[in-house]
Length: 289
Image: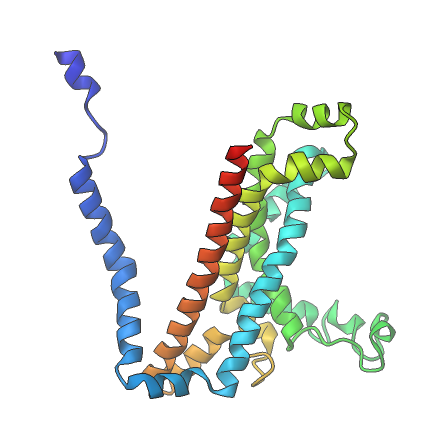
């Protein structure tokens, strides 16, 4: 009897107390604040909501924030996979240093990252000066050269910087656990390198890649500190949506701020649900195989 009772003991309390605490914690930190945002934005009617959400300046910020976030996550998807592959499959001098530097965007304050990127890519910076008129690389982009900082391109670079670790850290453990015998078997059966990657490696990595993509996109959409410095915050050109929310709050326009926040929440939820549905579909498809 003693052994039987010890076998039934659990580290955590029973299902009911655990579920109750989970729902309370989730409601306190997530559901109640989000509900307050929706209620605040809807308090002045649909017309006020629509007017605040569809001004040309706000719509331009939507396009930049979501477009740059999706593009940055897609770029990180490719180069993050390559970087994770090199860290797992190859040995080279400075490997541990590179592996540690991957986590730098996690540890670095976002404002510091923004200032560093701005100093690097500004027209008088080490890299930015190469692309302005008179720079070494300017002729490749015409007479006006290429403006990196204080433009949408600068926003994209900042979002790539802060999103890269999410791809690498989600793909790296899967690569480490992947059995090399599968690739060797494919090669022994006559598969080329691309065929091995396409039919053996990629299906195994796809759920992790989609997870990293979703995490990188979610981080990029809400990023503020590392973007505002390099963006330049030019109206209708390089203003991100979080900056519009801050601007509305500084003007005591709480309805406008919550309205923009609601639009961002809805778009983010829809995109993340679509990515999660695609991830679940790939997992089910892989299980059937």
